[in-house]
Image (cartoon, rainbow over all chains, first blue to last red; front, side, top):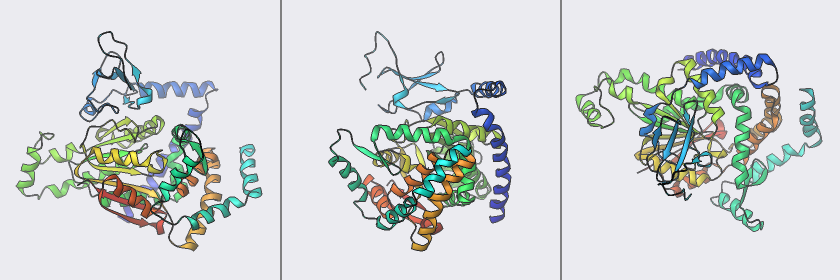
Length: 112
Length: 327
């Protein structure tokens, strides 16, 4: 086990160093090279599809009721409360403060 | 970089009391059961309409703490793993391995890793259950019958349990999740992990969904620890286990002084040199001192409704692993 730990320690620190080399250019926003690299990064991230197997776990954090996945707007919608949680880069953002109110005539407005 | 290091050095030279303050806090902070309650009572007597809480050694309104913590982790996300290795000299890997060994997850288990941004616990979980596969070959048929009866498991008994092991990583900080997801893709473990941005105090999961709930080095960053514990109890299945790995009080006084000196002098310097952000690392170090000690956290867990609560100190009390069951 100790050998495994040491082996992983050394191998993983190599991976980590590789990320360290790239990250300063990701953080710098002014230079054109950084923006090109950012663009590649963004393209990579936006190809992430939302994993629908998450739907078996996810509920609205406020009402704990099930959600509906709206493919068109890429959001998870709680029809009861009329709020929509965005999915950004395939990661659902279930933080209540960042949910959007869904304006619909038939549904009652969100109470919370 | 020289310009930003200068205020840090000035602070170290002209305010050496920072070290002394930390020692007296460490000495005076007996793990009294009421210590956490006193902190919130004190804030009431301050007369402010809104309750205040601690952000490191500062006192801030509760509404601000979450925002400040978010900013801290947004800044350190890309260097989080490097800094962990540098600050703990790689020992954090052993602590996390110990957490998984204590949890001893079986194939088919569902893990919720809260505040697990960069995925360390999640990846270890997948490797652990993967290595348990060999054990299943010799299992008696009654266990396989149980697995096949499980509505969530429609596959064959041999493959089902391992295929059904899911881990959901929930973190309030999207930057940390993105770093974690990138790591997953690089190590080829992306399939078993689901990433969700969510608040530990208001989890977006239904009741009784998970077998194990882990929170490693994240509980001290939550504004309302008792709410997070209550949510943990809610999402765990009956028989589910709560495991919290967190920095805690060092038991030996000599080691405590060395640890304080290292924390307050070396770590912010490392933070500045490696991550270019000493303030975030000073916050991290201070937040450790403000977090309840081993016994106090154990009482909090019991108050939240967990049974058979216990803890195990590691590295002389630098880190403590608390565990409780939902029964």
